[in-house]
Amino acid sequence: MQTRTPSIRKVTISLPPNLLEFADRQAEQMRISRSEIISRALAQAKAAEEERLAVEGYRFYSPEASEFAEASARSSAEALTHAG
Image (cartoon, rainbow, N blue to C red; front, side):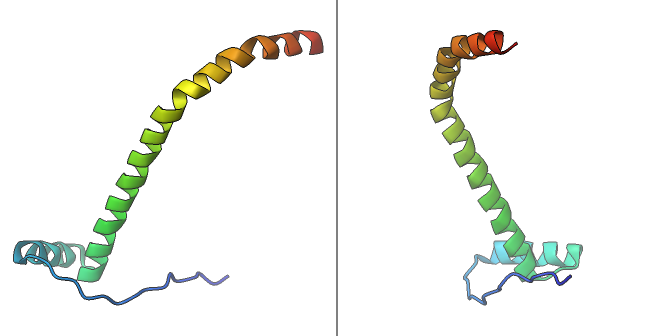
């Protein structure tokens, strides 16, 4: 079975010297490329943003879900009572 390699695009970015030096030190310590360090940092930022949005959505919809659960609890209990 072949593993599919994600498509990679080459880009040019500008970084402040201190961030470039940090990326290079991290890459050297981890024995990976500078591109991989930057890619991992962006992936972590993306995951954190997705988590933040999920939490925000949960907080937004949780009162509605609680209201629905409370409203349907009696009907569900009756259905279970009659089924058993």
